[in-house]
Image (cartoon, rainbow, N blue to C red; front, side, top):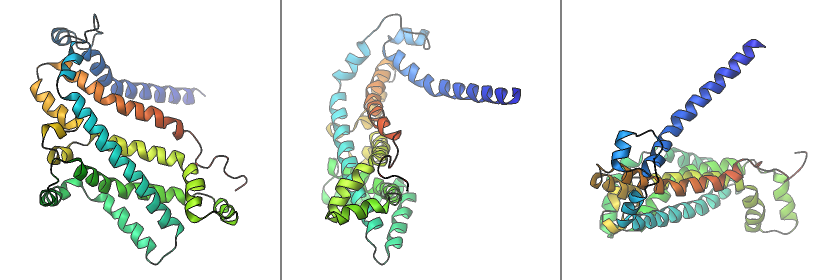
Length: 275
């Protein structure tokens, strides 16, 4: 009994220590955004003596709002199209038997290991030939291509777990294959789709290399690219940089809190009994 208690205490202490290490940068970022430059340099870990919003005013006097809108356009467009295409492709690979289906799925999975940096020069040459450099369309298309392999793989594995009796019952009731997908498969796939959407959103929102290369005009930059230049211009104004990071983090926190509701639900809870 004593051994188990000591083991549990050690685990809790380790988890607490890891939580402190993970949350320390967040604390420093939030508190630093409400301090003046002098106060932050003197007492970086202390709470702000008073709420100073000068850093946020400086942040939004730049092109920060435009960069934020650009990130929303690119991220929502890429993630939205990826989810639709990946859902249809995964359902087709799972539900429609055809020759070479496993080979196609294997090729899709193999594309997950291709690093984006390898594709950078060929994609830039194609974008130059099409005249798409500094346009949202090329960034959205590249993001879709990079997110699709993992999305198709994850959803295909989930669709295989849906009870076949549900699909057969819907077909016997006269539902077409697309109706089965829309009315049965999609509602049951809420947790998997929400999880995948949040993962893709986090990646697309934080992606820097591709957006830095393809979006060269200042008005077309995404938030991460803008903050990179923003940091170099305000390298001595730490509260301004901290405030920009706080604003950039808020959409990700909101997306996670929204998707968290679906993570705790059963994948097919209530769909069928005794199977």
